Image (cartoon, rainbow, N blue to C red):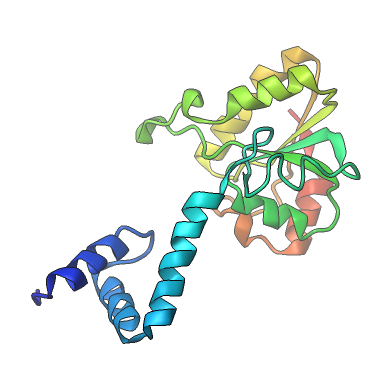
Length: 199
């Protein structure tokens, strides 16, 4: 492997930590940044620093936000009694683009995966239970990804929530098994919401 000057090698090593970025891609990105103007490189560094300083989790739904509560939780026009549970903040965009759903969200930040050492304790489930205790939630829609981990999480949540007397539904399997919600088109996502089933 080619030997780079220390600042370049350090940047390449940091870029390789990003998902989907291997050694060659990291080198291309590092050289692109090097060729960029000082202003463009500074703007990139500033945007990254801004992201880390100003974004945090909503105290109600655990979505990523710059205001607390987030724009979904603080919107009085949304149905606060209908909560859609998703694995990641990126999943919210897939549901929102249907323009069908008017409830609020709860983000788990993952799925139960014993092989990766992720149990219920690592997910934002306690926040969901606290929320149910404080608010008059009538229905929980489980919109976990249709993967083995997503299904395991949905079953776990269903067993946890049903004894509380809340209607628990699961989005229909219009979404291909093994894919992520963020890649679903509007029609597939709409059908999944319309055909959700009680668990």
